[in-house]
Image (tube, rainbow, N blue to C red; front, side):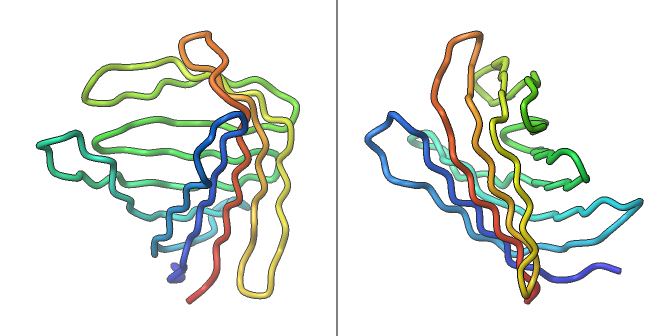
Amino acid sequence: MKTDVKISIRGMQNGTLGEAIEIVSVGEMYEKDGQIYVSYEEGTDAAPGMDCETVKSLLKVCPEQVEIIKKGAAETHMVFVEDKDTISYYSTPFGEMEVAIHTDQLERISTEKGFQILLKYALEINAAHMSDCNVDIRVETR
């Protein structure tokens, strides 16, 4: 059975002067084979003169890992496993990049209305270290 949820993803890249970025969306959550799936949509940043496009996203929460799968204007399948390195690709209308992730922390916390996931990871793009990231994902029933 699918449940309506609100999903909030707040991310901060260490070493940058920018502020935290937060995406808030609504979607649906369901469980299958002991895994939790949360589907939602988000907009992409449009290049000058282009319309904003929608990306369909899926958060897959497994006992030992978390996956973020995006399809649309930008596509990727990122896998986060604590103390492990994973490699994926990030496709955009402007080209494809190799993305390597080393997850330092993956913590799932049950809350009154859902759950929270805390991620800390190092991000490399095309074999170059880009940043250390902190991401706070909150999923709550509506």
